[in-house]
Length: 91
Image (tube, rainbow, N blue to C red):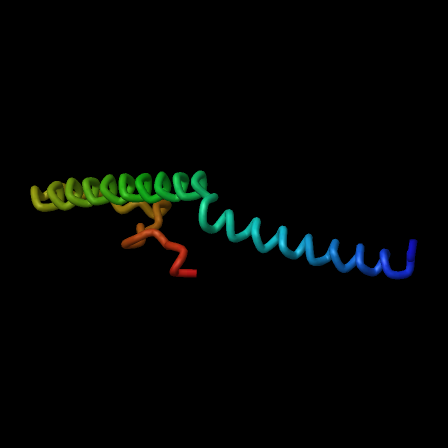
C-alpha cells in the first residue's frame, strides 16, 4: 500500500467532511431546527405584551386619579418607564 498517498487523502477528506458537516448542520438548524428558540421568542413577545398592557392600565389609573384631584407622590426610586422595550433590531 502506498502510505504516502493515503495520508494526505485522509487529511483532505477529513477536512472536507468536517466542513460539510458544519454547513449541513447550520442549514438544517436554520431550516428545520430552532423550534424551541422560536417558541421561547414567542413566549417572550407574549410576556412583553402583557407587561406593556399592565403598564398602560397603571398609567390610565394614575391619570384617572390625577383627574379626580388626588395628589400622588412622585417616587424618586422608580425610574421612568420607557415607551417600549428594546428589541433585537435596537442593538
